[in-house]
Amino acid sequence: MSNKQGAGQSSTADDSLENIDFQILPNKDGPTKKQDYLFKMIIIGNSGVGKSCLMNRMTTNEFTEDHEVTVGVEFGSLLIKMQEKTEAQQETVVKLQIWDTAGQESFQSITKIFYRGAHAVLLTYSIASQLSFSNLSHWLAEVRQQSEADAVIVLVGNQKDRESEREVSREAGEKFAKENNIDFFFETSAKTSDGVQQTFIMASKMLYRRHLSKIRQAKKQMQDKIRGRKLQQQQDNKDAQERKKNCGC
Image (cartoon, one colour):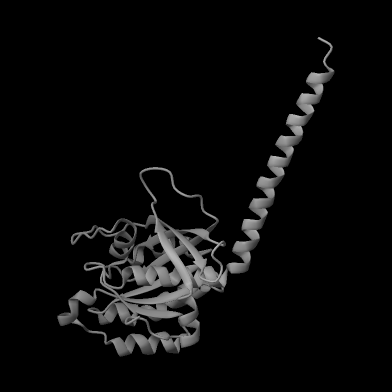
C-alpha cells in the first residue's frame, strides 16, 4: 500500500492484515445482513480539517465543499463483512458506528462524552494547517484519557488535494505517529476520495484482529442461543402433539 506507514507496527503485522478479506455491505435501502459485532469509532481533530467530509465520503461516497460546521456530533455507520483467507467458513459482519465530533473548543465538554468506549480513533489534521497538526498532542491526550485502553489509533493527514498549500510534511506526520506509538498513518483527501477507504478498512481490520477472541465468543453465544430456541420450539411442538393425542374430546 503506497499510503501506509509502519508507524507503531512492523511490516509483518501490516502484512498479516492483508490476509483478511473484506466486503462493504449495503447499509441503507432494504434489508441488511445482521451484525455479529459492533465497534465504535470517533473522528477527532481541529475544526475545518474535514472530519465530516471523511465520514460522508466513506459512508455515502459524497463530498460537499461547503459542508456546515459540526455542532456537537454527527453520526454514520458502516457494515463490513470480514474473514481470514485461511478460514473461508468463518465470515464475520461488523458494524462500524462512526462519531464525527465537533472541533471547536466551545463544544469539547460535550464531545468528550462520546470518547468513552471508543474502540478506534481517527486522529485528524489538515496537511494545509500547521495549527491543526500542532494541536494533535492535545487531542491525543484527550483520547488516551477517555477511550478504551486498547483503542486502535490512526493518524490521518487529510486534504492532501491541497498540496500547493501544504504546511505539514509527510515526514512530520510519520515522525509524530512513530513517537506516539500510533497504529497507522495515512494521508487522505475526502474531496478526491484518495486513501479514505483504505484508512477506514485498515482500522476495521485491526479492530477485527485485536478483538477476534471476543468476536468468536459473541458469535458462539448467539449460535448457542439460537440453537436453544430451536430445541425449545421442537420440544413445545412435541408436547403439543402429545396433548392432542391424549385429548379425550
